[in-house]
Image (cartoon, rainbow, N blue to C red):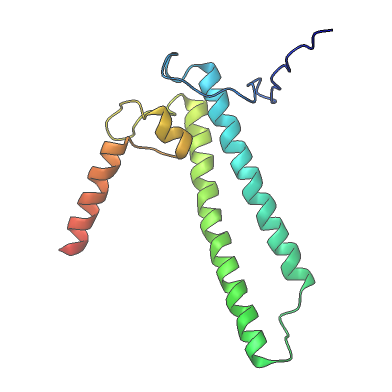
Length: 148
């Protein structure tokens, strides 16, 4: 008896779990937008879950170590953890902005040049707002203005 191949699972947006956007299809078609939307929502969900775990851990663990060296070490560790969470809080704002751009039909296009951002760049950094070339120009200009 032959076994049927496993059908790809689909998420809530109807995107196959093994789907990857391709340059062979229309840029930012419904399927690509759904793919990136799901990617952004999953990323945000993971960040929020990690943040909640940090809060739960902070509530349950005491920073009152009897040894002063242990206390200093714990405080340093928590300081690093909280700075990481603060960076992630800022990242959530960028994820929300990308989700808003999807909703408004602006996602995937450079905010400077209006050109499409490469799919490879969006897969690697789904919150990207500029093409690689525009981003590099922007960073060079920032460096020059900082040196002044």
